[in-house]
Image (cartoon, rainbow, N blue to C red):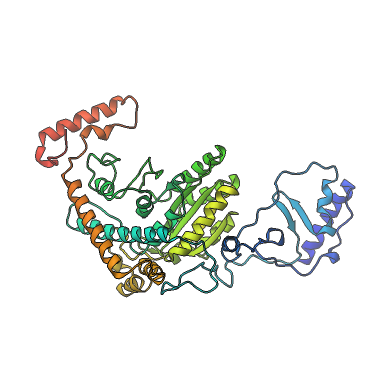
Length: 481
């Protein structure tokens, strides 16, 4: 090693003497100690006077430091940047300090990134918490929508088990992520969901009847019956239609966010995905593009511990998802996803940063998928029923938020009973009506892609119609031919 070092220095000094602009390098002048700096440098140290700013800039939550421009300055003496006395290289992206110590970055920190929280398990404000204040009417709407989402999931799940719809995905245990994040956004913000964010659509005004129409695939379904149940979408509500492939919506959100920035819109794009989605290449490409182009996009990861039956420890060795954002140069935070106030505050702050500072933000929401992955899954095959029950009872986000509004004298048992009865009644009526509406016409299978249908589609439509006529008993009678 010593021989290699001496030869390396000799080679460098040879080139230096040829250039005639630097003195020779003396290895003995190198420092034998490596100065370890905090992930956020002194130059990037935040102003923590404002309580809300305190939330978004605390090093254990949001971790980010924007380096200097990568544009090289055109000075005749630019080689002096490599002066050994400076012990730093002015490399594109910012100065890099040298060290004679052979030391690798640790694969994992001694302490995991902290998780931002406001409410304890009993729904009480944790002493010293910094959070965005929520008005009574907003808090009550948040709770009402969380209950509505819970009831809707229960009834649609039962409908699938009865054979009335073909498929369903619940959000049980993740209601706070859905509703609290939606409450912190505006209708102008573009939503790119996965398949476990119907609460965002519910908050924006999508009715129970519209949900039912989509799940039953009738002619009033905006997707014209061409999508699986729960693949909602609403152009009016800026909620892009869900698709089954994992993570495809993430780069789409970044592109949309970049467009918002170019058009100087006072809005951002928000995309949701699970921990399994971060194992896809689309996630990494999207984060890198967003960071480099400074796109106003908020990434919200529901880390519920399971990608269907694959636990997080079989997906990655890193400290969850939050550190992945920091690795790409994105401001990031880890939040208790079962704490509605924490989610509301984090998303509210992230949206402001994305729009005002033109930068992406990553939120890792720690939660747990209490329900099965879908109606095609039996989660007790890969996790214990006791574990599921503990999360359902001890960490339920709906119960925790209810305890908080009750402590403020904003809610009581009578209001709770009335709400659940009303939502259940509306939900059952919506299902009954959706079942009575006829299915979309067969022709809708071949529209909305080409302005003028190509010959192969025309031929396929003709063959389908002939097949239905020859075998009428094999096709639903309520499908208009």
